[in-house]
Image (cartoon, rainbow, N blue to C red; front, side):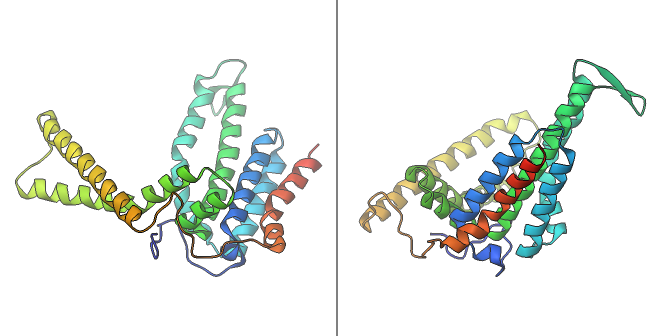
Length: 251
């Protein structure tokens, strides 16, 4: 399903990281995130070491740093929230550049920024080296609930179809002189949303019947072999293992 469909976050390549089975990379990122979250916020040098480890992964995977930085825009809401916390926080106050800030708020802001940034970078590297549908297959290999994985697969496959349907409906409205300029156009937008829902539901019914007629029994067939060797597991888990070693040295 979705063969040949590449997400915008995916960066095609043939590095060691690209070739790792998806279940190995998923588990490695998850374990790395746990180690990062468990790290006390006072261990500044440990977070720097984590960032260096991710930098090594990016180099090995041949993912350019500008590519990663551009996609870190998704973190902007966390950054804005972190900047607000010291201002509205309670407790002991300190002056920074003439601005009174909460000391507990500053620690909380640093904690959010450091851990969220590392988590976002790890996720970007995962997405850049693994196709979305392959990530879902890896989740299935890790014994995540099959129904949830299949729902995510269909969402990934048909999201572009629904977006394209929305675009065609918008073009059809505008070709008839419609312009959404004020609240009076809300009923038209609401009817369009209802029509889109009905079309999507009917499409889902047709796809389901087509799958049943082709022998669908509750599990999607997997054509590629995504089995992992002991060596591949070792390469993937090297990241959380080294992060855990750094975490242990900090005590």
